[in-house]
Image (tube, rainbow, N blue to C red; front, side, top):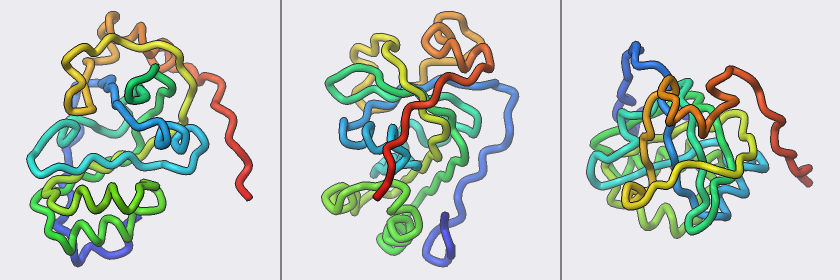
Length: 178
C-alpha cells in the first residue's frame, strides 16, 4: 500500500457504475502466474507509455482469468482494489515501485523496461483459484489484457461459472513460506 503520495498524482477514482461485473483475461508470464498462485504476488501491474487497457476498464469486484503466456489458462481471481495513475513522472514510478514492489513481485528488468511509463494500473488480486479452460483470444490478446464482457452474458459466464453462481471454488494450495 502506498505510504505517501507526495511523488504521485492522485489515483484516478472510478465512480461506481451499474455496469455489473466484467470478466477480463490477462496474459501473464509463467513465473508470475506461479507467484500469484502461491500468494507471493498479490498486485498485477500494467504500466504503459500510452493509455491502454486495463486503464479505466477494471473495477473492484471484476473477475480476471489468468492465462499463462504461450500456455493454458491457470487461474481465476477476483479484483480487490484498483489504483490507476496517469501522467506519471520518474519520481512517481519510483514511488510506485517502493510502495507496491513486494506485492507486484517484479524483477529489476521489468522496472527498467517500464521507466518511461506514463500510465499505471495496479490491480489487487484476491482469492486465486485454479482453472483449466478459458476463451480463445486469437488476435485480441496483443496487449496482454482483454475485457471479455459482463458476467451476466452467458457466453462469458461459462468461463467463470463459480463466479457467476457466487460460489467459492476450492482455493489453490499455498506453499509454505520459509
